Image 1 (cartoon, rainbow, N blue to C red):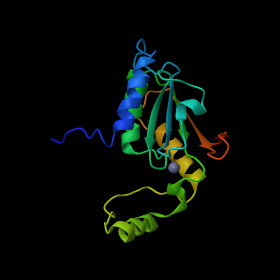
Image 2: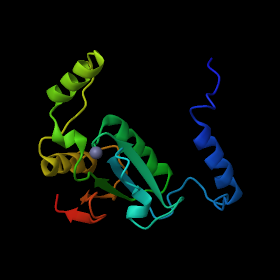
Image 3: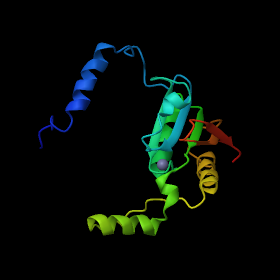
Length: 170
Ligand SMILES: [Zn+2]
C-alpha cells in the first residue's frame, strides 16, 4: 500500500474542500435525469455537461481516447439503459483529436522513441476517417442486441475551436 501523495495532489484536495462548502447536489440519485448518455474523448478541452447545457445529475458521461465505442462502453450503456434512466446516447468525437491525427503505428513509434517502451500489445483504436469511425461506432451501439430497445443513438462532432456541436447524419 502506498500513502496518498498530498504533495502531488494538494491542489485537488484543497479545491475539493471549497467544493464541499458550496455543495448542493446531495439530493441527486444515480439516475440520469435527462435520460442522456454522452460518449466522448478524454480531451481536456471538452466539458461534456457544459457543452449541452446540463449539470450534475442530468447525464452519464463515458470517456476514452478518441470517443470510441469499445466493449467497455457497450457494457456501461447496457447498465445505463436498463438501470440508470438512459434512453438516448450521443457519440461525440471532436476536431483536432490526437487519435485522428496519427495512425496506430506512428503513436506506438512515438512512445517507443521518446520513452523506450513498446506499447504494441495495446490497440489504441486510432481513426483515419472520423466520420466513418463515427458511423461505425453509432451503428455498433444501435445494433447491440443487449441494449434496451427504443434507445435513440446519434452522432455529433464537437468543435474545440468554437464550442459548436455539429449534428451528423449517421
Ligand atoms: Zn480526442
